[in-house]
Length: 131
Image (cartoon, rainbow, N blue to C red; front, top):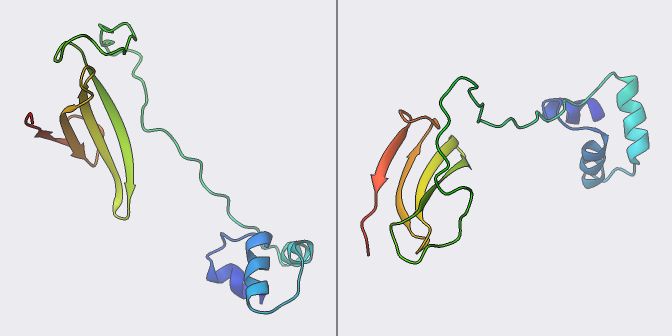
């Protein structure tokens, strides 16, 4: 039964999850017993892959000037200081990249772009009008 559940879940379930499945089916087992039986059958669960960031700095690229000097306090009037943000949104069809430009005075979105890739070609610009 342990081997069946292991293959049913494509080798990703370890002894705690298989124990929970067995208990849901009415078996009285402990995690240590299931772990021992899995070790005897050479069933080892695959680990989850670590998430890697999508940003890789290019050492030779020109650095963008920091005109705000990392000071994000709201200015006295609008359209004086803007900042940008990149966000990765996981969806059922894959990752989606969202780039937004915000006005620091009003905290409104001045413009945004969405796309599959986080480069300029992969993002499609969607300007927003003022309300």
